[in-house]
Image (cartoon, rainbow, N blue to C red; front, side, top):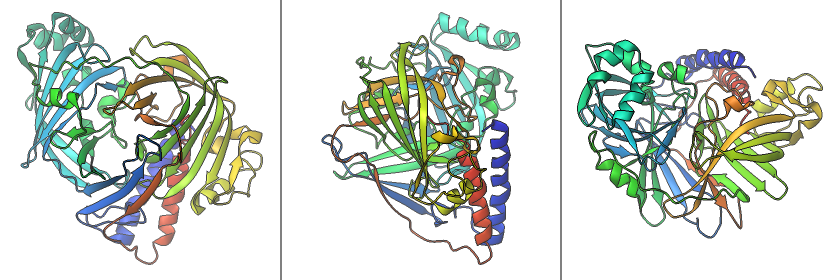
Length: 505
């Protein structure tokens, strides 16, 4: 599906949703639909999550999300983060009860965050607005910047940064900066041209979600999800997020052990954290990998992923379960993809990552709700499986029709990928796969290969391998009579937009 068509469909969603709000619920700002239109003023959304029933991950986790979120405190990176570009950074964000925030962003020259280049100090105010009607379970916010400062950590970093900035910015700021000394890059009385030239934006603060993991052993981990960063550098400063980055964790309630958390928490703009070198992990795809959580992608996508690799035959299978809500409790459709893959060279842009080429030769789709089935039954004969024969819970093979143009699926299909492996805090294997383009396009040529990663997956090695969910919410919001048709219409338009994002291989 083209990005133009997808944009048109999403505009339809944006037009229709306010109609439902006005005609149906007359709800308060925080009455957000998180399932079958469930909510309360201080809602706690909860779910049970099990990665899989295997020897080393038997901890059952209950996750709650408060709406509106409680931001007070300091939130820190748990690893060296990779943003599209690529950019390598660690973050430390502190929110105060009077709405002020202070953010520290430390940028590095390489993917292990051992060689600091420069640090940014960002001060401003944030105001929570309302629950998001686009990204369910999220809260929209607005921010006001008061100051942005920079500290360069080497002459080489100063030269690299100067080469990216317009001459006016270099002459006014960077040329005068001395490594190790703070310099004001922006204040509320100055323009933002130099910030934009650096690709700087805190648009990520336009979308927030705070989750608390309640572990069976009694411990808690609090995570702050901020808005996603556009994969196209040129679009970054204008982007309005609808998905999330990898979360920050609360400095007082984080995973244990977490040496990175402590280093980032104790850092300052003049003393950036130098992360310990992680042990190299050989890439070994063999086995069954699953999502660690309900994943949120840009433009209204909630899903879980389930991959199986057979290296001896270079065969892979991916199962993508799509949902309507941020708790992954309301399934809409399931997509199963089969094909082959070839391992390429080590990445020249990301140390420790490896290039791959994936080919998809077979795709099967199962409609999981009536709206999706009805949508697929409206396709022309011979274009998307057996026209008129779509039923809830019944799988259809799209291979005989060479895919489904309406769903953006064309077979056979090739993509250029990027994989990396790491160990988590418990020394368990994590698999990072390339981040999907924000605009929904496909990395179908080498120049479009990802330069950043999606949320990591964990290895399932034995026993039951399907994630299990159990959700509950505090209150129900009833739609007024006469709005059921509007809800169905929203779901159909939403389904169309959603299906346009099936290129997730």
